[in-house]
Length: 105
Image 1 (cartoon, rainbow, N blue to C red):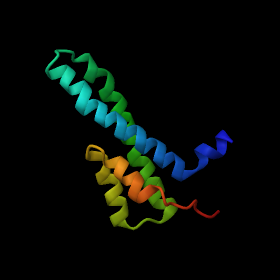
Image 2 (cartoon, rainbow, N blue to C red):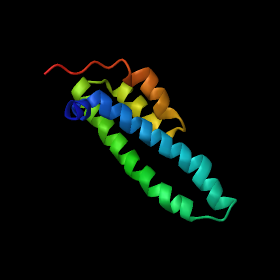
Image 3 (cartoon, rainbow, N blue to C red):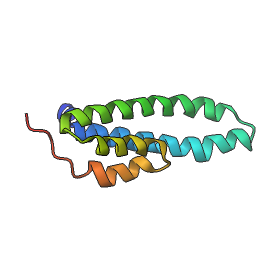
Image 4 (cartoon, rainbow, N blue to C red):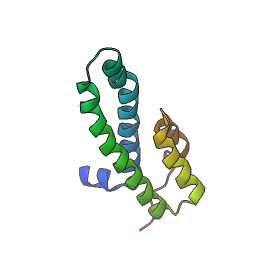
């Protein structure tokens, strides 16, 4: 069951999108204030690279989804734009990713 769970482009996109969005919010609203106000730069040093990795994974997963689902450029652009807006990947999940059907093989 785990193999088919992670083989699904839709599930991969939704999980990575959720993780990227959550890491972005943690970075912006917890780690950066801890660094700037609390004098704890280690918060950003820890969360920053994790978010960076998840951001790259999200972009690659969106590109893969564009290919597999034959998305138009506009939909792909919206999914990519969502990654730079706080909470954007949650919006993308609700508006773009939930209704996806598995590509026929």
